[in-house]
Length: 611
Ligand code: FER
Image (cartoon, rainbow, N blue to C red; front, side, top):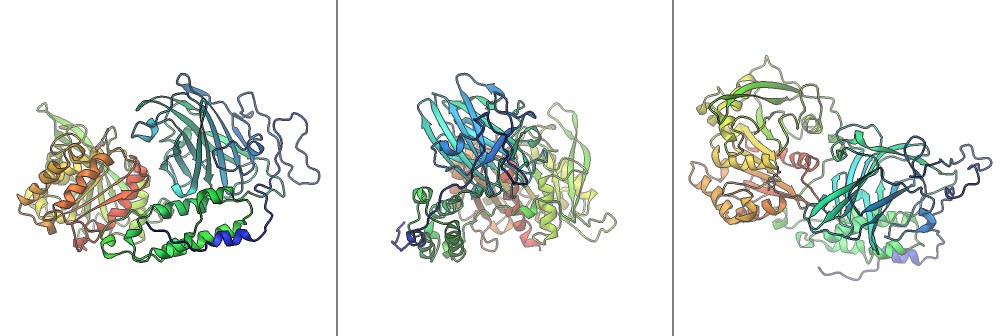
């Protein structure tokens, strides 16, 4: 990529002599034993909160005082000396120890982790199996089990590679440094709300100890269950204190740095006019911003806005527009809709491999306004499969639950993004218990039951009627549910027109064959179509994964090979031009947080031909 030398906005601005001290907060000195924190006339004197030898207050919470440390991988003594150091309660590893500290300002909470570990490794492709530090935050401290909008879970390895399990990567800035006996992590976490003295947030902090490519242990500050990744109610708490009347936050160059970094990672060959963005960046660099102390926040913010504006003016080339890009799920889709659908449960029996039958169930999402007595209104049906180790309850819970996937679909329908549809969540466990055979149960038992119970396009549960209504049926799933989706494509093309395989490859040739035998796998899938009565207009495959997902190395090569077989798989983001696309989300990992967003991206393309 060529970089023009253009007079940068920021250097011009900083040339103006400005006197700016990095952090203007004055902190209570918690290391001193004298003083009671009284500061004369102030109505709410900053409190010094006593902590025990492990750094916790009388209620077992961490304590954070007001201050804005520089996030540069150096322990800035001036700021951090005021932050009580906590010793984690749960240490499930040998020869590794860690301490954590926290500070806060008007926009962010800051974490410092000092890890002693002489044996460091980032060998594993799975981020949590690398030597790394994790931060979990429940900003509104509602201890909701499921992660909500205010909750985040991030991880940074000792080489400063960030992975985001829940939350928005743009809000985090981290720096790490190897020390003689371990490493340190400094993290700035931009908050959604405006924090204040006395506020209590839910928090958990974790160290992953890796040896080679395995995680051999963990250290946790509060959580003994290991479930923090899945349940915010196991977090501990942190209390914010120490902001005095005239305290102000230090400089925040981090949002601009993140935006510049993200912009520089963009593929400029995709745009006709990328020069507008390069001009807006000028020669702003991370180290210049971090070390610059004489710039005003407004100037940084101005440049941030100018860069955003330039990015919004980018125009894609025709070729680039043909790719499908990831759109993060807007927060407004995560909240409870005013037009909620309902969840019902149906029970059935299905053949097992012992010649008997198993009792099973699936859940059914019915959209708001679904009227049992109105058989004139018919609905498309999406069958949505869970991943390995999960079950039919995972996606929707059950009747009266409102998990994130349900709220997303409710909101998409209410906002008119998609037509109302029915969503069925079965399980591949039980019955024949084989993802390669699940299509039999689907066609023999599940579709006939679901689609005669509700108003769908299937006239009856017969094979002929299921086939006749295939254009009103989609099948998707995550991980092993994605493997199931590819099998369904290969075996049940007669009955399903739309496929949504998420973060899992086709095991048609062999387990993980999309990764080990991508060419053969793609050929196999193409031959399914070539040997059928169907043409490329008769089906769609919308696939997605994150580039940090464990399935990425399996799915990506398969997709690349499929793209070459353009007599069958016609790649395009435009459903009028092609029948196949693949979304690759930067930073995405193997979790439902990401799959829900993929589903948000793909749902508007399901049933496109039928509207
Ligand atoms: C993949 C498909 C499925 C994959 C993993 C899975 C690593 C499932 C794993 C599990 O459920 O344990 O491509 O890649």
